[in-house]
Amino acid sequence: MTTPTNFLVYTEIVRFLDITFPEWKTHEGLGSSGEEFVSNCIENNLYLFNDKVLTNKQRYKTLFSDISRMYVRYKTNYVFIFNDYCRDTFFKNDELFFETDSKNKVDEKYKKHVLSLKYKTVFFPNYYPL
Image (cartoon, rainbow, N blue to C red; front, side):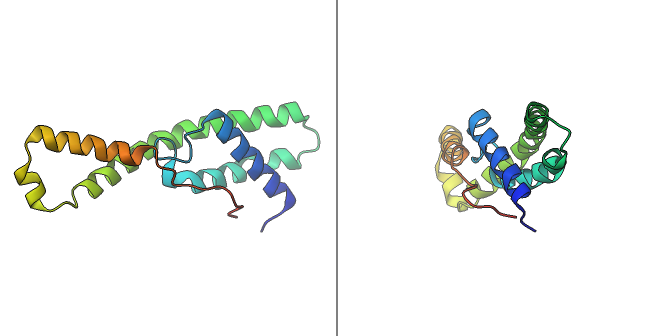
């Protein structure tokens, strides 16, 4: 259920990610796992905004620290997902593609393929997903 507190936490998470990890919406960052990441951050940190004893400084320091730690874990895991995606989409080419080009040309085409995907934005947090 969407509540004002959930929305506040959501906007603070997205704002922090945009500033600290500007690549987070691309395959270079969290890619297609971005929505799951934001949802888990909300779930893990909602208590901070319901705790009336915490100061804003304590609240945001804890939130930003938690997001940063979670980001490193998610990004590490996403590297494997992205590598699989690159490989699978590249090898959808027909057999003739690989038979007619030299190994160096195939390597160069694979490199271009990965780079064409790496910086593509795949998560658009312009709406509140929960």
